[in-house]
Image 1 (cartoon, each protein chain N blue to C red):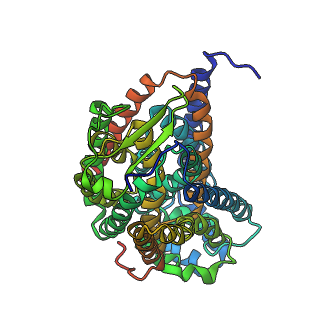
Image 2 (image 1 turned 45 degrees about the vertical axis):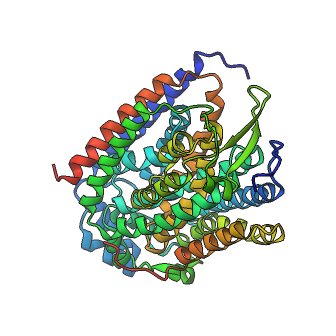
Image 3 (image 1 turned 135 degrees about the vertical axis):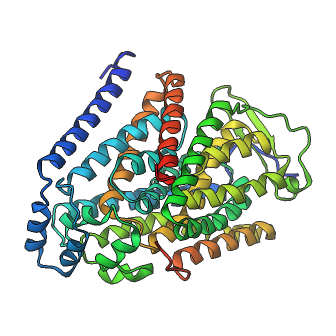
Length: 141
Length: 341
């Protein structure tokens, strides 16, 4: 790998990653802003009434989950049509962008026979999917 | 519109003044309705299971629900400007300050702090990658270690009692302040020979420096100890929801020998990966409340854009020392909170 001649320009896979990240990130932020306005202006009814949220946000997350009847893991997806949980669409898009951006790296590295980097990219996807899956949950205080 | 130099500090002062005013409004509203009637009315009107459950808390500051998100939006906007001018990430200021001075529980502040750091890193990533200031080759191995450990850190942070996390947070924040004060990063560290691991992983590259017009070639050394450091960095990032640019940059620059621009760029890009893993853990555990998290993200991002524009003309040395002072204060406050004092 040391025989690569550097021109100072980003590699094609790096540019692809950057482009995907750009659209995903700004799409996520835009979506987040729109859903938040729908939420705070009461256009979509929330699961927890807006006036009740300040009573819970100073308590530990366990109390919030119990009193607000808020599901953990991906349980929020059944409440997606509620004003507060619709905001999770933008948040999830932001949190999921890295996983999506990593996918095209694997065939590029495999094509170049850079198996270590292909394995690193695959392992990262697995780690992030594990974190996203909510498999290891509970125990919040 | 033409602006003179003196108008920038004046504008910052004006923003801070408005922030203080908003706090004053909130405090006034709080004092004006302390009899708890607001919550009773709200609960009676809501007619909802959740509202009934909230009565069990029996605690209300009397502040209208929209006041804190609005204050937070503005506060984070100012924070975003200051963070850019001081050369630190938003998360490292957000967590100690918001947990110290806002009514939110640390669980939610850490969740929002990670989302703030993540959004900032994702937004900065494309530009850094395209200009080759962030190196995918340098980031990939480091990110795998840091993001795996961030998951562990997030679980540790959730499992430990709040006062213990507060205590460690205080110590960490004060340590960061000292690190910022003492750290002397090098623009172009001398790396005479790349080590075997660095060569095997192809941790080298080049970028065109717009300041000098030169092609700057770089390679890494001390790669293994550098990679091992990211175990600790990942755990701390996940545990406290701080982001970790304050630790990434010295390790990449001083230890591994990456040029400062590459270290800063790759560090910012790395946060988009490291914080993703921890953010998912906090998200799955219910630690992200949109009502407070989204104004934090939007405010900090808008503030960062303004900060970048001011950066070209402002002299950030004073702001850097001010931030170090604020971090010491906020760290001390967290420390005392953790000790129950």
